[in-house]
Structure formats: C-alpha cells, structure tokens
Length: 96
Length: 115
Image (cartoon, rainbow over all chains, first blue to last red; front, side, top):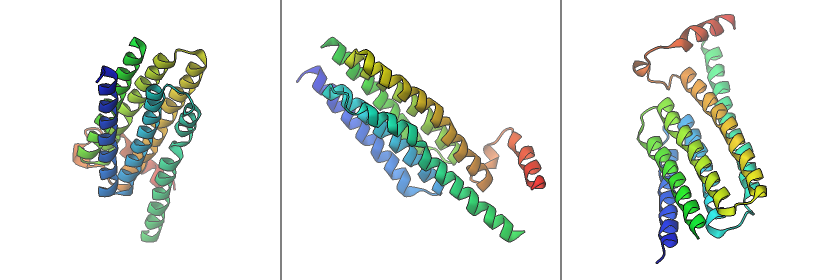
C-alpha cells in the first residue's frame, strides 16, 4: 500500500463526509435560504471533486466542466434569493 | 512521483477545507453564521485544489484553464452570499440579539419610506 493509495482513500472519505453533511443540512432546512446555501456548498464540492479527479486520474477532460460550473453555479442561489424576495414583498403589500 | 504526492496532499487540504465548510453549515445556528462558514473555506479549498491540479499537470494550457476558474469562483461566490444574506435580513431570519451594530436598519427604513 503506497502513500498515494492512502492519500486517495483519505480524500474520497473526506469528500464523502462533507457531501453527506451538506445534504443533511439541505434536508433539515429549516428555511429555504438554508437549503440554498447547502446546495451552493454541495455544488462547490462537486467542483472540488472534479479537480481531485483530474489530479488522481491524471487527465484534463473535466476542466471545461469546472469552468462552466464555476460560472453558472451562482444562478440557482440568486434565483432562490429573488423568489423569496417576491413572496415577501407580496405579503407586505397584502398586509398594508 | 514526488509531484503527484504533493498534488495529492494539496487536494487533501482542499477536501479538509470543504469538510470544515460542511461542519460549520451543520452546526451553526442562523443564516448569516452558516453563510460565514460556507463561503470562505469553499473558495480557499477551490484555490488549493486548483494549485494541486497545476502541480500535477505542469503545463501552461492547464494553468490557462485554472486561472479563470479560480477568478470566476472568487467573483461569483460573494454575489450569491450577498443576495442570500440580504434576503435573510429582510425575512427576519437574522437573530437580532447577536447583532452588535445594525447599520442596515437605517437604510432599510429609508428604502421602505421611499417606496
């Protein structure tokens, strides 16, 4: 068992635990904003895992995918934040 | 061989930073605290892993891909965090007892009065 194998197993374990914790927060909530943050964290972890895959398997096929995730990953969180804003303002108008 | 090991150690550091973000996300109590835990280690972990990929590949074309990835991640992460924090404040998800100085309250009043 070389040191590389040990490092790869450690990396896989740490990423798995991190993704699991983010998914637990996504299930627990309690508000939709917490879920948006958790999904953002999970997407960043996917980005990091693609980078780890490039290092472990010594290829660069995934770099364009990483570029796309980095540039479009923001959209989901921003859309959720705007959606919450609309609903909130509508409720305020109904009250006043 | 030595470069591969260095790259794997850098990726492991990035993975541990991702784990830190997830632990903070799970254990902190309200939205701004969770944002604080989530965004900072994410970007740093991403940067460390990008350095790891550059060390493993050692080619200019890979570096030319990695620099925009890190720059775009650094540019977009604060935008989404800002939007979520703003909505959390307006929704009342922020624990008011934990706020020492509330500079946004005056601005929010002005905004509400003006329409």
